[in-house]
Image (tube, rainbow, N blue to C red; front, side, top):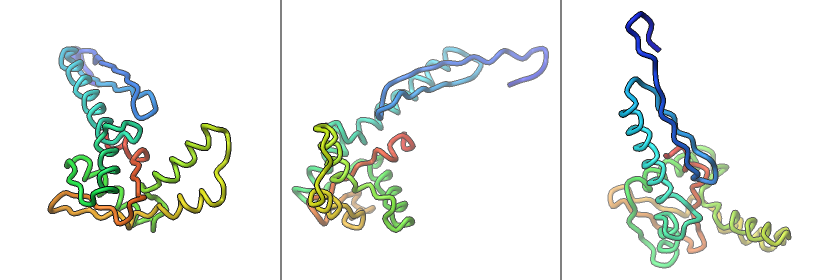
Length: 166
């Protein structure tokens, strides 16, 4: 905020969009409304781009394609944006000794499936899903910018970091 007799009142542009399972509201403040609208639109476009890359519920997202290809084929090249988020997540997993683990996909899928039929998973189902979770089974090659799963049951879910990545 500026002070003084020549100070113009600040204006704002506001955009809201439903992404990442929540309502995202973007506000841009400044003096020229035309630039504010452009900045807000650029911000929304960035959010939409990140959602297209990281959305685990969209079978066409880059993350979903990576999960399928890495499980079936091995080495998968990925975009710089996805690689950077994977690298960040892997660093957090290491720093927390696996307490934070983005390979929770099999466990999350199990609980979603069971919630849909209002039935808890069995002990065997839980044990099988837990056995498929381990960030150390995801190998990142920063030189080739590729991802490899050492276990075909691995599924990466970046929902916990997608909003921050946007």
